[in-house]
Image 1: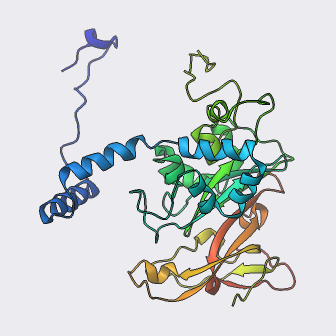
Image 2: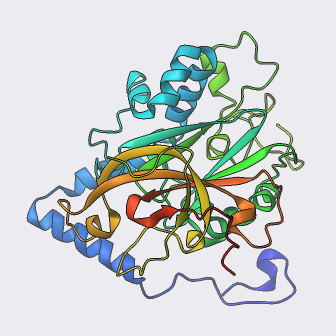
Image 3: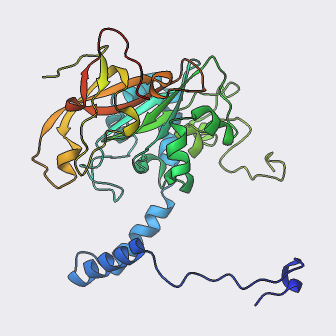
Length: 233
Length: 102
């Protein structure tokens, strides 16, 4: 039992405990996983390796695709014409079992190019479809009703909640991925990046810029650490 | 053979969603423009039940003006939304713009 001495409140409260009961889907997942292992469909180690790999996929595949599109106009045209084929050029294969989906789940990738006239943003109102081979696991907010219901209805307000203000003379185009197509935003290359290597360009292409809730910033890289004021440390 | 072409104005039909559909409620009765012809595949109403040899038809990317989707859209007039439909969900828009569903 915590007391007022432990953390500076002037009241006491009960210890925070995990809930006693597992929710329905936790029970279901456990049952299916244990049954699969018992039946020999895969081993416990297979499952652990999958989860360990899946949790670390991250967004670098997407960043690599965007950086290549920024430096190679012909690649960009191929990417916009056939997203899956262009990804395969860079070693990202949507059609083979990668553990992040099956061919019946998604076989089409449309890359939405931001321009001075159009700002794109991605959502799945029905569930939480996301370009996982490129961006890894979706962030928790992307999967919540709060985002999914509101970004189609009040996109500029939702973007503002992410600190992203789109000018009124720029079209905000929302893509609701309700079928087999998956989407990723191709952000505009910021000024001041002339002559940068692809690796350096990748460092400013963050997850949120490829969902469409943020714009790349030459002063904010994937290794920047937020300070109290939000400026890079 | 696709029934609709790029540039066609289409209205989303309000069919009864028996057990499963991917046609969003917020699009029913709304009018947009076909911006891309998509490949043909099994409709979700069959695929969701494991009927992989179910009904196949062309899909379409439809773009809506947000002002036409939401009766009191507070954003900018040029804002849009795009999403996909199978052919059965589309009908030609009437010649005169219909008022949006309430």
